[in-house]
Amino acid sequence: MSDFRPTLRPALGAKPVISSTAVSLSPLAEGVIIHVLAQPGERDVASFLDGLAKRAALAVRSVSPGQWFIVGEEPMAYQDMKDLFDGLEPRATGVDQSHGRVRIRISGKLARRVLSKGTAVDLAPATFPVGQSATTFIGHIAAHITCVDADTFEIIVLRGFAESLWDDLARMRAEFG
Image (tube, rainbow, N blue to C red; front, side, top):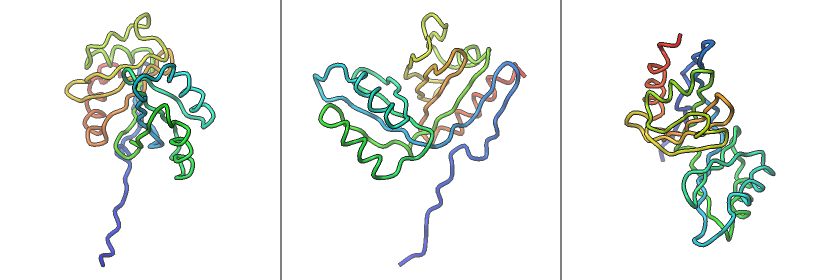
């Protein structure tokens, strides 16, 4: 039997926060990301998920009709994850995506302008207010963007594309200092 033990490295662990007065880019802790899929025909699942997530100090991000991400800053213990999944049933099903996706934060008064360089989503405050989410492309990379505060966005990306997206975002914000 082999003594090999895989080493789990944060996807953006070596990336420092890039900050200026206009815009900041920072990797978020690899906590928890759960993809939730509602059972066909279920109604008012978003309110149900909000209540469930708040009890566990988590946040809900809309993905598409009948789908959401539940995200948190800290990894979940097995029993807590099991309890959350049990709480979803029978209205919805959850899939742990914590090891397959990464979160990035971009914030500052020019964050919308930086993101607008790479996506076709209209990020104007009137059409993309706090709490709004969209699944889109940033350049050639599929990403999920959520406006979490007036000038702060969370981007969820597949782990294998995280470093490439980080580099693209760093180049897009370079003109702003």
